[in-house]
Image (cartoon, rainbow, N blue to C red):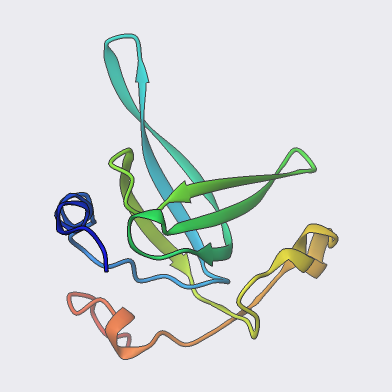
Length: 129
């Protein structure tokens, strides 16, 4: 049995809106950066290769290639430093962790695109005719 005080503290730090991305999706993570007394937003875009944990300890890892070198960054889901997360593309994968992308280069790192699920579709978007 957990402490009720810990549960209350954990609930207060959780994100209000759910995250609508899965492993394999290409996303933009907008993070708040403090430089002196100024605050700016920095964007890290890449493919989600892992999601782990639950509750306040839930994390996700994003991988991208910068000047031919692979860069991975792990973000806490409920971090107040994350301004917003935009999903650019939904990737179709059959694994929970995509660590095999670390050994691949070039076109071998591409993932197939999957159709968006009904809850992922933007209701304000116009249909193409």
